[in-house]
Amino acid sequence: MDFNYFLPVLYAFIASLGFGGLCNLHGKHLFWAALGGALGWFSYLLTLHYSSVYPASFICAAVVAIYSEILARTQKCTVTTFLLIGIIPMVPGAGIFHTMEYCIQGDTANFITTGLQTLGIAACLAIGILVIDSTWRMIRNLQRKRI
Image (cartoon, rainbow, N blue to C red; front, side, top):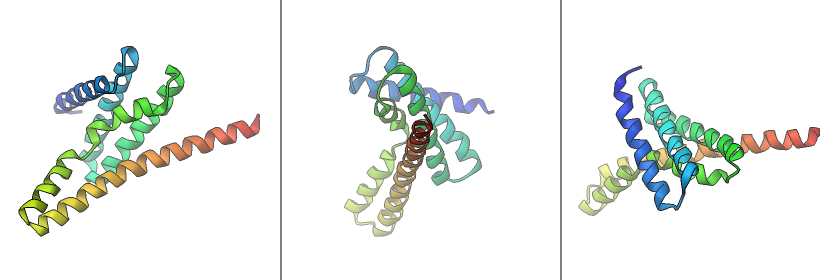
């Protein structure tokens, strides 16, 4: 593993920590939620090394969703608390900014290209979360029916 992953993961942790503070998280929940953001960004960088941005976005969203589901059970808190903070580093804010910049400048080709790429990344994040959430609920329902 390359040491170049350390600083971006640290920055993702700090960004998640700051956003968690804005969302009024305190104590250990803030730390664990920020750790989820760092874990998600690490999985994004690792997957991006082997594939394109879309599978990397899907995998990192799935990793953060699994982490959030597990942590919600162990910390006796809602999944949304950890999921929202953990997914923040992956939100394509720069893509949204550049899409609107190209729109205002009248650069239609770059507007469409950047907009579709940003929409694709956001869709991969949403689908990753949806797949894990649906799978988790299905497993829990099957466990309840056995008992």
